[in-house]
Structures are given as C-alpha cells and as structure tokens.
Image (tube, rainbow, N blue to C red):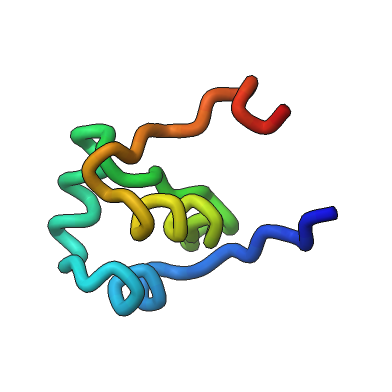
Length: 70
C-alpha cells in the first residue's frame, strides 16, 4: 500500500531539480516536465512522485497515462 502523494511547491521543485523557474515552465510547455496542479485560486504545486520520476530519468520522462496506474 502506497502512502499519500505529497504536493510540493515551486521553491521545493527548484531546489530538488536544480533548474531555474523559466527552464521549468519552458519544459512544461515542451511536454518534457511534469505539469503543475492548481491547488488554490493563486497557488500551484506538483505531485512529489512526478518530480521524483523526472529526477530519476529526465531524458525519457513522459506524462503518465491513465492506464499506467494499474
């Protein structure tokens, strides 16, 4: 049984990945970085598991498909 997936904010993503803010948003637009989630009216975050998957293999990272969770 897996624990709950934490939501991490941009500051944590910047530290964990070593990327700049502009690089992260450019990679999101290119589809080579996990997209952020809307968590409030003015806030966004990322699933920690998505960032961990990207860190483990940034070159071949692709978004999860719905059937990947099975």
